[in-house]
Image (cartoon, rainbow, N blue to C red):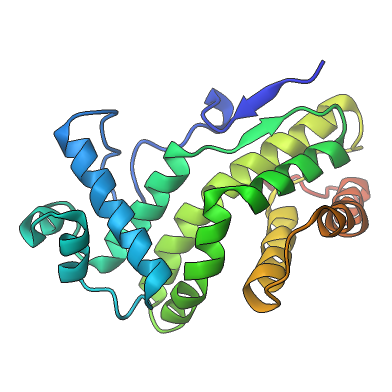
Amino acid sequence: MSTVTALSDPRTAAPSSTPTGHPAPAGGGRGASRERAICAAMLDLLNEVSYESVTMDAVAARAKASKATIYRRWANKAELVVRAIQLEIDENPWILPDTGSLVGDIESFLHTQSQDDRCAFNTAAMRGLTYATSNDPDLAELLRSVMEEAGLRAWALVLDRAYARGELAHPVAATLPMAVTKAMFFCRMGLESDPMDDRYISQLANDVLLPVIRHQAETAGGGLCR
């Protein structure tokens, strides 16, 4: 019987703090609502203009908050961007149904990634952030840590299920499958601007990801350095 797992599952729970060390917001209350509004304003602006063009003044105006309130929580724009992305991930966890097969789980996961709100954010704003990180190593490291964490947890769950079913000879690390998926998604939607339709997802799952994963599983020691 198929089961459904969200990334709030204890095995894949999100950290209680951001990469910058700030605590995660409470589930409710005025402070949490204000933080959500500020983070939403930042993401909206990133979809409209480049990272360099976003100012704290603009964020404050969009969120109807004061700059003093923003700077009490975040020391700079990079920290706010990272927190906004982290909050989006935490509050919209991926749902990962157990389809009973590795390829089914992969296709389901890819469909989730291609259809949710984060996908729209990735295609609209990630180009600008990618350019910004090329000149800002600190921002690059912060973004990498927060954006890769959720993906690694999700891939680890999918691969662990496959190993438990006996579909893989050895455990497989999540790092390479996630890197391949990220590259293919970015190329398809960020550079080519083509849709992530059913045919493309099936090709990516069956012709690219399965061979990569099986090679890792069949290689002596493959995937053990998670």
